[in-house]
Length: 436
Image 1: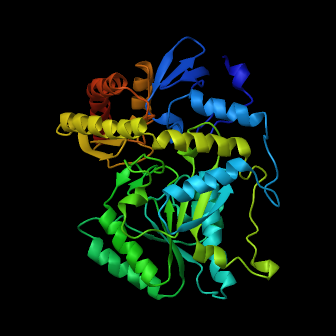
Image 2: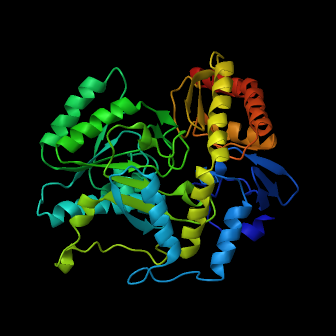
Image 3: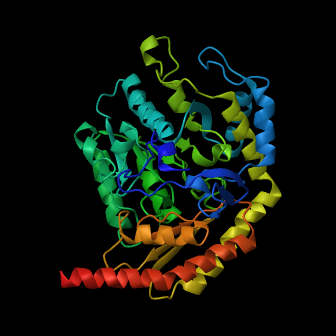
C-alpha cells in the first residue's frame, strides 16, 4: 500500500506531516493481525481496547450475518426491535440492581455526552437552576465531544477548544495520603449547591497512563455525593465487560453510581455502539406531560440492530465459564510478570487491575503522554511483531481474552528485550538535556 493509496485519509491522533506510512492490515484472527506485506503482529492492546474475544470471532460474526438478512437498521424513534430489547434485558441483568433504563448511542464519547446531558436536564426539569457544575478527577479523559472534553483534564487534546468548554471542578485522584483532605474539599465544593454530578473513570484512568486507585476511596466520595443529592456517573467505556477482573469496575464498589457509560468492548470490537444506563429516578424526571421535559437526544444509528446483535453475542461469550477463567488466568500471568520486573532500574512502577498491566518507565522527567520514549518503544515493539501503543512512558498490555499463555509470554519477553534499548534512549536523552 503506497502513499498515493492513503493520501485521502486523515488518521486520528496522528500528526500527518510527521507520521510514517500506516501499516496496511488485510485480515486478523484471534490475537494476530496480518499485514499486506506478509508481516504479522500480535495484538496486545485489543486494537484500542475494543476487542474482547479475538478478531473475526466466528460466533459473533455468524450472529451479525444472520441478523443482516433479517433487519439491518430501522429508525429507533417510534420503533423498536428484538436485538435492542434483548440487549437491554442482558445489560439490566448483569448491572447492579439500581440501573433500570438503557439509552443507546454510538460510541464512548457520546455515551458520556448523553450522561452529562441527562444530569443537567434532570435538574432543569426539576426546576433547580443552580446545579450546573460537574466534579471530575485531574488527568481524566472522557472523550472528544464538547461535554466529554469539558469533563476531561485540560491538556493538549483540547487546548484549541479551551474557550468553548464549560468549567468543571477537577480534584486529585484519591490515595491514602490525601483522602481525608480530599473528602473535605469534595464536601466544600458540593456545599455551594451548584454541583449536578460527579463523573469518574472507576479504579483505572485509561488514557492518563493507566493510573489506578482503590475502590474504598471512590466509595467514600460517592457516599458523600449521594448523601447530598449529587449524581454519580461511572465512565466504564474502557473498564467495562471484564477488563478489571469483574464484569464492571463498579462491581468492586459498595456504593453504586446513578449512571454508567459503556462502549468499546460492548460489541467485542465488531461494531460501534454506546450505551448510557441510569436509575429509575433519573428517567422519571423526563417522564412527563410537558413536551419540553423530553430528552431530545438521538443518533441516526441509535440501537442499530447489527451492533445490538454483536453486543448480545459478545456478552454471551463473556459470561461463559471458559472466558471468566481466561480473565482470571491473564491476571495471574500479569502478576507473575510484574514480580519478575518490578525491581529493575528502568521500572518505576508496575500496576495491575484484572487484565490490565501497566509498566511506568523511570524516565527521569516525570510521566507524560507525549514523552519521546513513546515512539522509540512503539517502533521497537512493531519491529518484533507486537502491537503495543505506549501512553508516553507507560507501556501497557490489555489483550483479547482469547490470548494464550504462549502469546502472553512472547509479549512479556519482547518487553524485557526492549528494556536495555529503552534505558539507553532514556539515558542519552537525559544526558543531552543536562548538557543544554
